Length: 370
Image (cartoon, rainbow, N blue to C red):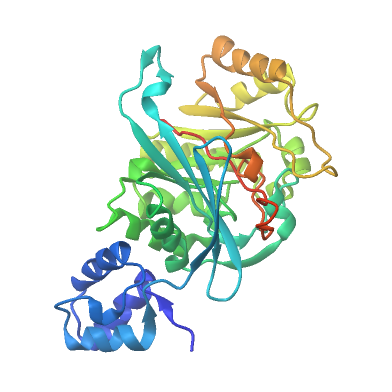
């Protein structure tokens, strides 16, 4: 028999309603499981007898296990290889920061140690971006709400997670219903993560963007743009053919008007493809009516056979200076973390690690500030 995760919110709500159990007990159960992931249902005190019956017959505290934990030599990045109930694997990345060490608008940042968790939403990905290792896996399956949330449960045992980015394996907006349910669980007790601390990244699924703010108000949106013109975008991101740039920008305009929030634009730097000065000016022109932060991402190699090469530091710096200095657009360069464990941007792909030889590779997440 296949049991559901207790964090599969739609299922536990439905089963409790059918059994006449108050839904107010759900966050109590979640809190207990977060603190005691290996618990038995009888360990949770003071539940109605009908609740215990439902839990025993249909649910497990966790349906996934951590197969391996791999630490990067940088000392701040950890990759979790998580095995799902069906035998498939996904990866999640914990990235630790001390916000006092950076500078923001010329001033020392407030705050202190905090961690960002990069979460996967699918096994594999159907978008097929040519610079991304996950795309080489193809699409395997969507994750359930519980399988998404359990990544946070596992990671929370290693670090105090304060920020969530849906930038792991998969296209989050292609698993829209489960994404929304999982985020709502994370917003609620016992997690209570602020929507301002959560970011969903997408290649530009227009119909989903059009309803995202209504379903998840206050959430940050990141768009993997990667090119200022449709032709280049289609060359490196085949899925872009289904989402023409003109229509995508119109949906982003509507999203920004409704949400009144800045949009993070992700832009991977590919030598000789999208990193010339003219591309910087074209990108600025495309975004001139938006409130955005552009995040330039150094390309991370995904194997010797890759058709792409990393842009030089000089090119990246020039690109940034044009956007920021000439056009006045706030532009950052992503600090790569966890490359040695394939925990950098575009490297996430499930290769089971040979634990006698070290790690397989993964995806980088940046310290997002809006």
